[in-house]
Image (cartoon, rainbow, N blue to C red; front, side, top):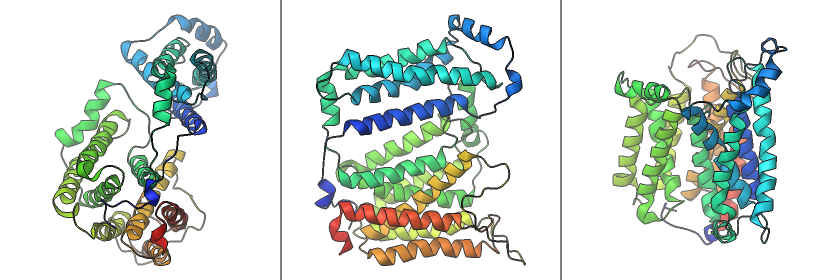
Length: 399
């Protein structure tokens, strides 16, 4: 099945239920907590008898323009998702008061928690700007008509899985997921591209194959006539996020991989009838290149790690999330592509799972990444989930 075709199953649609919007609201709250407390350097010794009085007096301090903007933007999604979760027929003002009260708790809570983080400044005045951002995000959706218009938009079932896999690609690339509003940070993120351009072949190969896979996934989401334009938007958003998110940089390899993938999709694969299989082969070939670098061969085999998600010393929970997102994208996209090319589900599972088992086996003697059960486990779970979801929206694929 090529990227331009849609099955009957893929056309299923439904209203977006209110609980989905509450779930999005909760996810936004978790992001606020995560971003406000990162990098979680808690130190009880930084808390003393003067902390509470100073904190209570800080409601008068409203920060600089950058801090104000950041505090407003951080709570915009909470206001939007909170209002979109309103039941049909409920008046806007009581629901807005409810949303504001629920959001006020984490807004104050993160400021209190920051008292024990020396790298953070706990300022009670930030809460005012947080609430201002929430109200700004909520105001457009105080209109019942607009809320209905958004929630009644058709949700194409066939687009859910490709969108999820694209989000996983973003998750693999954008750790630690904390935005910055510091202009110097923006310049630092672009320096590896503009001032010190260096090309990393293995990075290029991995990103190139991933972007070609994203091109196919994007084509399964939007209208065929403008899929290339949607792909440019997805790429542009990724690079903009890399500039904004701390500890991320844009390199020559990144830019070259995206440009090459865009050209490959538009001029070679976009209208090719067997493009799914070609992209699957390309993605499968790139995964060993990334996982086995720098291809150093050792005389003695490394010990196999049988404990799932066991990370090296110094690794954090963010490293685990980044690793899981990367493997879910790689395996999930590979399974999706193989299913889309017409292969049977059983064979697809064997190919996907077998690839990661083979890589981990080779890693006992090759490369700097120690062999582990983690990647095959993620591959098995991701494969089963993608196969089940694919069958649900494209029933004829399992025949």
